Image 1 (spheres, rainbow, N blue to C red):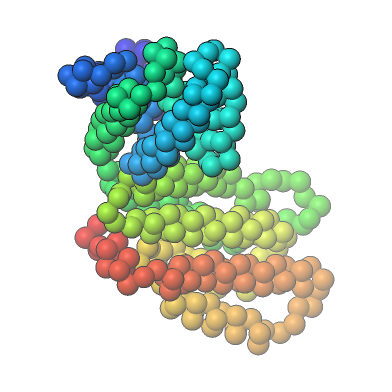
Image 2 (image 1 turned 60 degrees about the horizontal axis):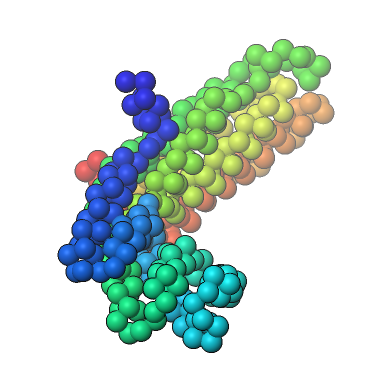
Length: 348
């Protein structure tokens, strides 16, 4: 039981492990059925071919096929002119690894090097044995690709991430509103009770965004026939808004009194919280914010230095809120009509 809990905590991909075990065995059995020499190598190639996502599997497979042809050409030239010797194989590795890095085919180094050792052992690079090695590579790669066509989708998890992050931001907006109207002392006070910290809330949101972006990238790379970049764009937008919220928190902590003008901002923060949703384009909120800014312009000038400084902080908060909303507005304006039709399903 303890081992199972540890494996679950470490996020072990049991499906991938099962694929590797079953796929490698299947590849060896199929290579044996075809009567291929060194059939066990097909299992190793399958093991190396199974990646975390479908797109990654296909990309790696393509690179390994190109690397195989490069290795064949290099090995053929070297073995033909210098013979089938261990030293020649060392020279092959020197040349082939260099070529692989030059052509960005590093993924094929291990697989191709193993296959070339078969030529060294057999002292044969005739057409029949080259075909044997090509079939080993094809069988191992094909089984790996075939198994990785099944990777459970995580659309539900990504949508759950979106709702969780929206809930996190709503909580922060509400607490920022409360903090603006909280009683404050002068700058000489070291009483931290009047400070707006929200450390736990911001740390939770940071962590949730990191996990959500990871899932969104995995989702994109496991979807071959449709474009799911929308989720990455969405979480990136929320990450930008998080930066603005952190700056608003810092500005609130500069307040030493609660000016009369703080009340409209606190109310507006609550309005943003109430209307905070994936589908809101923020245009009406921006109009309301502009009205608040206009009201600030006709206010009487501050009398004391402290009033002036605190009023200036409120102005900065207003412009931070404007940037916060513009980030969402730009996100909505930049997504395509097809993305809106596909992803804005209002049944959730």
